[in-house]
Length: 374
Ligand SMILES: *Cc1c(COP(=O)(O)O)cnc(C)c1O
Image 1 (tube, protein in one colour):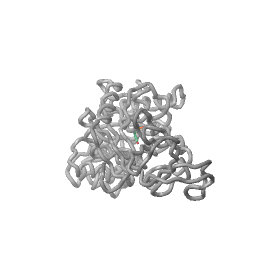
Image 2 (cartoon, rainbow, N blue to C red; image 1 turned 60 degrees about the vertical axis):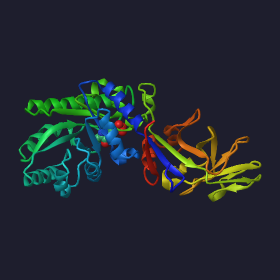
Image 3 (cartoon, rainbow, N blue to C red; image 1 turned 90 degrees about the vertical axis):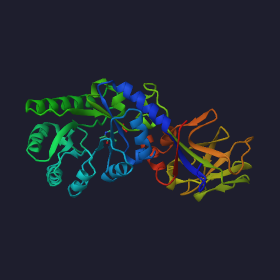
Image 4 (cartoon, protein in one colour; image 1 turned 60 degrees about the horizontal axis):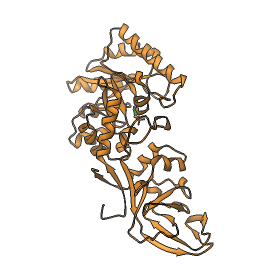
C-alpha cells in the first residue's frame, strides 16, 4: 500500500502472465503473440505489463503513440514494438531512432519514413494497414496491392507485415465481420499475385483471438484480454481470464446522519432514516465515473455498500448497511474482490453506460499503481 494516499490501483502481474498464457494457447502454436500495451497498458502500467507479457511468451508489443514506444525502450525493453497507427510524417526520424515497427497507410508518411531510414542507413520493417471496412485508418482493400507496389520502390523500408482490424469481431454470426475477412483474404491474394508476400499477416484482436479461429493467421494482437477483462459478453465462459486490476481505497471519514439529510453536490440522495455514511478519498479525477453516481456499489468488510450522492472529483460517499461496523482506515474495494464478493470492471462500466476498456484506462490517470504477484 502506498503511504502518501489512501487510494490506489493494485495490478497483479501473475494474472497478466496467466492471461497471456491461456490466450497464446487459444491462438495456437503457429500464431505469434502481440501484447497490446497502449494507453499505459489500459491503465495497468505499460512497463510492468510488457515485462510480464514477455515473460509469459508474448513475442511483440503494440502501442498507439511514439511516446509510448519510447518509454518502453527507455525502460530497457528490446522486444519488437509496433506502432499501431501512423505517427505524423515529421516524427519519422524519431520512429527510426526508436527502432519501432511502424504502421504505414499513407504516401506522406511512407515518403518521410523512407527518407529518415535512408538518412540513418537502415532498413525499417513496416506493416501495411489495410482497411477492410472499419473505415478508421488503412489503405482501402481494393487499392492495397497498388499501394504496396508503390511502397516497394521506396528505399530504406521493407514490408514485414500486412494487417487489418475488425469492427465486429465480438458479434457472433455478424455478416459484416465475414465481409471483412473476405476482403482481407482477397487483398492478400492480390499482393501475392504481384509477388508481394508479407511474412506476417494479422487481424485478430482479443475478441477474434477467442472467438474466430480463421482470423488468427500469423499473429494475434491481444489487448483487453491480457488484463483479464472480456472484450464483450460474447467471450464470457469461452476463456479463463483472471482480472489483473483492483481499485482500492481506505475509508477516510465516517459519520452518522439523520432522516432526510442530503449527501454531496446537488443532494441527489437523502437518507431514509438514521444512516452511517463513509467517505472514500477518490473520485472522478481518479477514474470513478461520475455517471455511476447513486448506482455503483463498493465493497467494505466483504459486503456490498451502495455509493450515494454524486461522485465528486476527489471523494465519494457510501451508505453503510445496518450491522456493518466501519472505521476510518478500513479497506474499501471499488473494483475487484474482497472476501467472497467481487465488483467486476464490467459492472462499473455498465453503470456508466460504457465499456470496461474506458473504465480501466481512466483508473490509470492519477492513482498510484502497486504491482503485486498473487
Ligand atoms: C487496440 C488494438 C488492438 C487490441 O484490441 P483489444 O480489443 O483490446 O484486444 C488490436 N489491434 C489494434 C490495431 C488496436 O488498435
